[in-house]
Length: 122
Image (tube, rainbow, N blue to C red; front, side, top):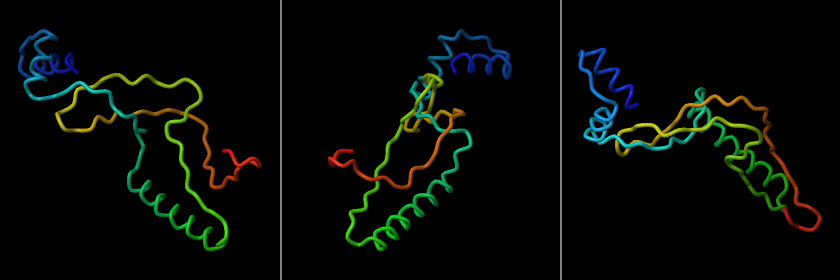
């Protein structure tokens, strides 16, 4: 982004500054260089929250249907197979969580049920 700052200053105001000076300006404005957490460019927080509510209702329904069974929710985050885009550091304002928009094309599926192995180990 330091190059973007210098380009912006040149295009908007006709000011030529070095990339290092762009870095200095960003630091003075309390921007920080952070590695963003990947987020798909089409991610929809409202849809995600609705899905979480549906999941909670589904777990409750299964528990009621099988009252003697132990119903557990388990999740795995960040499991990926194959090559992925490298996420580089980005400039952000202090106190703002770094989110990097990505568009990883992968095949996937939802697993709604699982059972333990015969020896009891998962």
